[in-house]
Image (cartoon, rainbow, N blue to C red; front, side, top):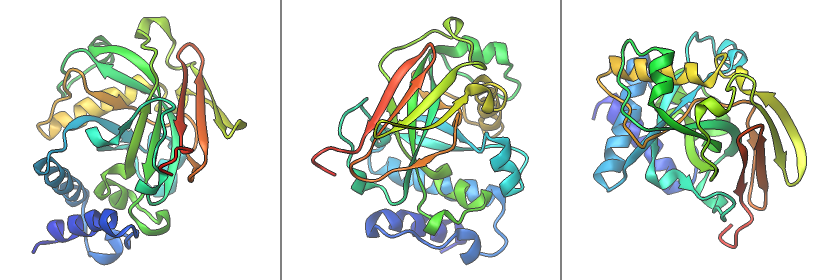
Length: 262
């Protein structure tokens, strides 16, 4: 069994066992970025073979501080599966995650396909049907979140779950760069920020994603959701927590971990 299959099996096994695994870069020598994306894709293909559907993508490492911390000069991406989506304020089973954290984002819903390379900001904006307030639940299958760029890429960019708000807003009704966000956990303010923290504008993350996927022969599809990156740092959560993000001009969205299933 080659390294890609073995590493993918390790990460998939973390779901079944409920225990995080050692970083792939500690277990397998000389992994490359292409190897890491191959490990990610091997897992996605296995999930698809069992009936899962890809419903979008997420962009990670859009914060300059986080890229400096990991010593990288570009973001990364992961896949969003249908099983990852949760309704606004509906109960979420915290037990399905290993090490969850929540971060606020402005989600894009595409009205038309978007295929790179060569996509411009104008083309990306034209492909967006509307924006929604969103909370991404990130979750590392790597023990203690001890990740490098290659580890998080292999781990599907630490994708865990998505909660979308219910108020669609056209892009021309909001200034993406200046959109502010307040993040609350259990009613207490934990962080504030503006969407300019996402590569200067979340739209730049969409451009990067379309062009990066295009180089790999993949296009973004109409109806798919794109999470362009966190506006503020992720906050850890556990069973019993309720996290709400308020976005200027976009409304609110809530991730509710207080359900009976928790």
